[in-house]
Length: 628
Image (cartoon, rainbow, N blue to C red):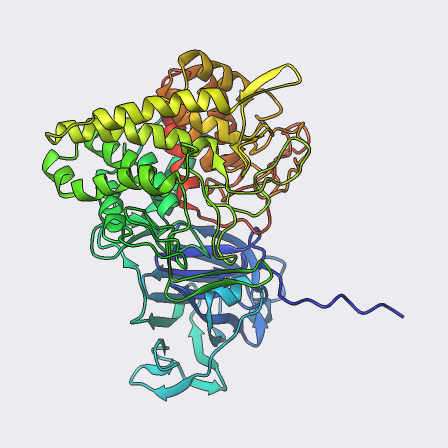
């Protein structure tokens, strides 16, 4: 007798690595590589923070189409197959099926084309079946989708469902029948395809949600990277730019990038800022839209429930409370639990100005600039530590509030987890860079930057005296200081984000860069988040051994700013090799196995893609390799 499985209080997060997605933010469609939806927990059509459709299946003459190949761009896919039930008995397929899917904001169009290569006409009964299921994104992510009740009505073009707020319309032009069975819709056509011809059918889905907090960008055009002479890099660049254009959103202040699919199709302070910064060589518009969008939502009061503070830049916005069952996390719709978004906002403003943003546009953002700088001084570094630090005061927010925001990401050399308040090394670098950048901006605006130049210099001195550790003959910056002020001494990729920020001396930067291209960090596919000889290292740990492409990209950018071109090229070549293995669409993260251990990168199975900052990493890589 088999034992009963252990009781689960929460479901399992859907795996994503084998799924196919086409999208135009804030809408996305997930399926298997044949185009079928409904076989896996992630499958369906999403818009904003809701899933509307959980299944979409095609049959011809009562049989599933046998898949033969797939081609996809960011917003469209073609699924090729054969349908042998209406073909002849010869070995070569003569009746071919192409299923074309196009996604635009609020809309999905599914076309089924039947091509007849026989000498006689063929009858193709085509059936598309759709399962409507309105469920909040957080419930789908938790593996416990909770569909709400739907009301249905007939329309001039088909059928429509709504839950009292959101709506789905299903249209099937020319269908012989469109019928409903509960919340499932079946559309049927009877095609008689003459020899040598192709006929098709069309199904269209339109979704709408008046409560959505983000909308599609009106402009989706980024610049292009020049040909590099490296075919793999150029393939990555083309795919990455297409994905980034598809991820652009707007809330009325200009375009910005959604963090990524499927869970983060919204405004994220840190992710959106880093993406915009990496993309500056391609688009000043995205930087300006990001700056204005976040400034419009900058903190104005103290609210422990949302982590809001005056001058603070938010972490994320949602349509409603976002829960993560099993993790104890319950985030309010507007959540400010991030330690790094505020200095990153100042840095982006400065770099946008250096890239050509007119001073008049900077002046419009001067109140937000001054408030952000004041937050670093008055709220970001409480007490007398002199360092920006965080701790979740609610017990239901994010335990870690830097970019490595999982609960177990900040570890000592023996693998033990640090307790807060936490002061991350890269956040001190960002604060130092923001203070120096803020001083320059204030002076350009006719003000006085002396306070912030002195603040940055004091940060450099405090950091040098406190963060550097000696261990086993190695000298390097700790990942963080814990709540007692003790350096958290695991070797982590965080130290790479100190490069080019003005926090370190040139000699210190060169020392850190040499360490990062050591095989304990440089996996052959990119930079590991933790060195492989650390006690907490595991190649499939979310933040303690995996490779995050954006992390490698940010480190490469810092190396270039610091003049460490050789090291930048080492990591860039590794990331190009990884991008090519993933077909030009780098995921959020992948396993930290060395190239010698695996002939291709090993997927982290729940990794999101496309991810904006992973795609944007192509820009510093292109720059690094173009200098070779």
